[in-house]
Image (cartoon, rainbow, N blue to C red):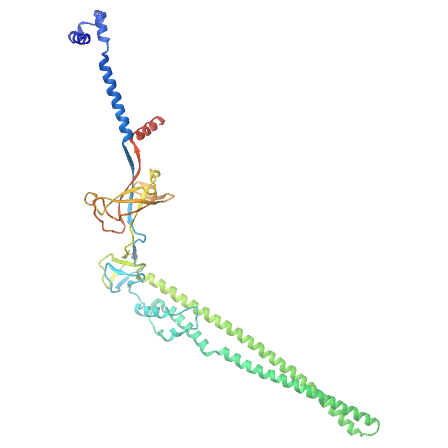
Length: 449
């Protein structure tokens, strides 16, 4: 009741009437007095609001979002086939988006080499085993007259070496020489044996002749024989000695000739081995040279599928249309591999990103408002950064791989058509943090600053 009277009194007091020394002690006491009930309510309200703020700051949690650019691809990326030479395009009866297998020929650039002839030669050579050079069965199937442009000399070199090794194997010139020398050596060994027999006979004849000469000499001393008889015995003995010496000389010569023939056989064997090795090396070198030059020719003029998939024409190509060197002509799109995301993540804030975190992907080809977003999960993060050039300058980025456990199905329930190298934005959902934690982190940053 008293408080009400005071408040009423305050309402009727004209404060302007009291100024300076005119204020009485009673009025000053009334003015300076605080209403205790009002202050209590104010305190309760302030404490309640602060408590609610702290409670909501503890309850409310939300994650940070780290953004990066994403490209959708598969384990095997599409490959563009670029013309390495200028010329008329020849299509191999194939159209855009046709299915192709590995090494299928899509087309080639017209040049001096007859592609049909080269293809035939390639099929024949495919049956040749360079580790067995003497299997020259392909020789009868290889053409002797061809027009292969820059490959002509390489082909004829291989064909010539193949003929040479075939003739070497067929004619067997060295084998015939060796056989002839072996026959000669056999005859010479027989002659050596015969010489040995003649020596034995000569030796016995020499012994008999000597005995006769010795006997006649004794008879001559005893006057029982004439000088003519002793002279005849001496002459026979000398002739027998000469024959024996000749027999020994003939044996030595026969053995020498046999040894020379044996050395000649060894020499011809060495020549045969060297010639065979020379022909084998020349054939292998010409074969590899031809194969390597065919591979180079294919790189220059041929369009070949590096893997199975579909071929996409990069223009409305037709036969005999001119293409420029360096011009992209076809794209080979791989088969139905599982798509995955390749995220280029700026280094700033990348420490929050971990394997397994959720990623929201919005593709440029499919507007978010109409199609929604695709959800994925991080499967790997590069250990080091990579420098990328952007319009704002060079930035350091991490490479993040994202898998799609549910495929390219959006949060609107729509299944997106997979397109290689589709680009968009990736939003990585990091760990939740309380609102109050963020507040104190900011206060700490301000204080430390």
